[in-house]
Image: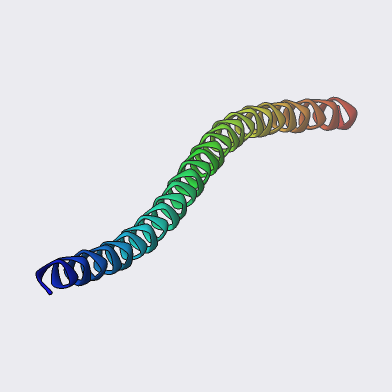
Length: 100
């Protein structure tokens, strides 16, 4: 009888061990899936960061180019005004000369 009880306990222990092993395997699968998801999220965050850095760099470049173009436009406008003033002065000289 005692040997039968020991055998029964051993079978029960093996059954519990099998159930625990299955639970651990399920838990490990969940952890692995979460790790993969985390890795994927981390990769996407890196891609997003690089994209934002690229856009920021392009924005700085465009801002610098715009500032340079505005400076050039200002210079050209100044030269145009100066040339216009010289032309007006020359026209007045010619007009005075014609009257004389």
